[in-house]
Length: 238
Image (tube, rainbow, N blue to C red; front, side, top):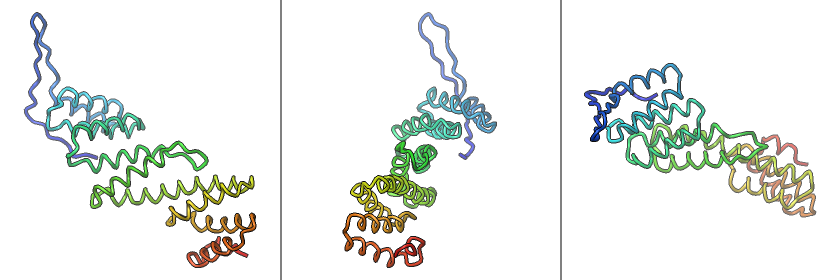
């Protein structure tokens, strides 16, 4: 994932206090070698702990930022998403101008993205993931991660619109027309590029017909025909 780091001349740190024995820290090179070995062997929890040791014992090293990157990625691979996010937050706090900031923003988005559940539940992760990917594109539109982030944004918008549609259908079944209309209009207004938009327009015609507002129903039917002439929901119009 990351470039292999070449570490040279890592001098052990010596700590001595009066009346106490001298404590010799492990050389940074040795910690890194073991950390990468554990990572390559897919022992991600052990790798993360070793990268954390490298960063905490040598915080002023030129490699401390890379240690945090690998710590976060190891925890991500271990599905310890909250631990990965904590590592990313530490990285952003101490290395805001580092070359890997775009990647770390993408990784934070992926930590939330991997925790997105099905449309019947709303853990909030979809909104967090969407926000992270949007911030990445705004700050680094030409980064190598921007294209992938855009694809994830579209997936997330469809997912969020799907949750809204699921709730709207339930409102319609209970004849809570006002709530259903509000939800469906939010899809039409904010998620035009999603696959849910044609269905939202169709169901708005149903809702307005149900409450006797035929003019509004006709308006959404015309909008559906104009924007999605060949869509399956357009064919359902009477």
